Length: 392
Ligand SMILES: *[C@@H]1O[C@H](CO)[C@@H](O)[C@H](O)[C@H]1NC(C)=O
Image (cartoon, rainbow, N blue to C red):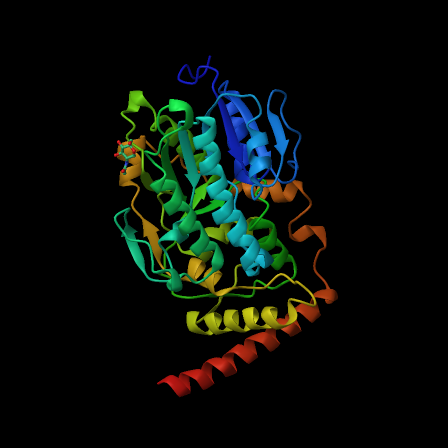
C-alpha cells in the first residue's frame, strides 16, 4: 500500500550485503519492490523473506550477468566499492578492479540486459582532495588524476565519470536508452555501521583517543544511513519519465546538511559511552606527517603483516580539512530533505553490544598501545620539524 510509484518493479543492488546496500534493499522491499542483492559475500544479518541474494564477484562479467537471473530489472543501484578505509586502502590493484572494472561491468550489463536506470553511489571524495571547500556545488570540476590523495578517491572518480558518460547510451535490442545519475554522500553513520564506528570505539577502548587535531572551526559533513537510503530512492524516481528524467546524467551531493567539526560530531558517542572527550589538540600538520609515517611503515611492513593503519593522509584530510557541500541541487531536482538524526541510537547500539566504560575493557594490556602511539608521534614530530626546517 505504501508506494504506488513502484508497481512491482525489480531492482538489483550491488554491494547488497554491505551496511548501506542491505539497508537500501530492506527499505525498497518494504515498499513492495522486488529486490535482488548482489555481493561477494552474504549479508551478516538474516535476509528478509522475499529478498533474493545472489553471490558473485563484480569483477567477473559472467557473475554480474548471472545476478540479473531471469528478471526484468528496472533499476540498478551500484553501491559496491572497495578500499574506502583501513587496510583496504593500501591495495591499489584490487581497488581499481572492483571500483573501475566492476563499474564498467555493471554499465555493460545494464546495456545488454535493457536496464533503463542506473544509480551510482559515489562519494564526496571525487571532488575533495584536501583543499578547503565551503558550500561547494556540483559545478566543481574533478581533480587532475595525480591530485587524488588515495586510490579509492581516484577510482571512484573514474567510475563516476564512466557512469555519467554512459547516460543516454543505447540499450540492446532497441529497448531504449540508459539513464544514469550519481549520488555523492558524506561519511555515513547509523546504528549497526560496521566500517568506521567499531574502529572508533575500539580506539576509545584501547585508550588511543587521547587527542583531537586540526582547527576546531574546521567543518565536515555526515549523512545518516536512512537519509542516504531516501536520497537513492528519490534519485531512481528522478530518472523516470514522470519526473522528466531530471536526474539523467547528473551528480548530486547528499548529506545531513549540518556541517560540523569532525570531533565534535563524535562527542555524544564518546561521552555517551562513558569516556572523557580529549582536551589535547594537536596541529593538523603534525598529524599529517604522522599519517605519512604510518603509510610508509605499512608500505614496508605491510607485506609481512597487513595491519590496520592507524591513520592515512586521506583520513586526515577527511577529518581535519573543511569541506562541505550545498544540498540545493538535490533538494530542487530530487526533492531531497534531510531528516534530523543524532548519535543517541548509536550509543544505545554499542551499549547493547557490550561496549561502554563500565564493561571493564580498560587495563594494563593497552599500555603497549600507548607506548607505540607515543613513539610514532615523536617520530612524526621529528620528521615534521626536520622537513619544516628544510622546506622553509
Ligand atoms: C542524459 O541522457 C538523456 C537522454 O539521452 C539526455 O536527454 C540528457 O540530456 C542526458 N544528460 C546529460 C547531463 O547529458
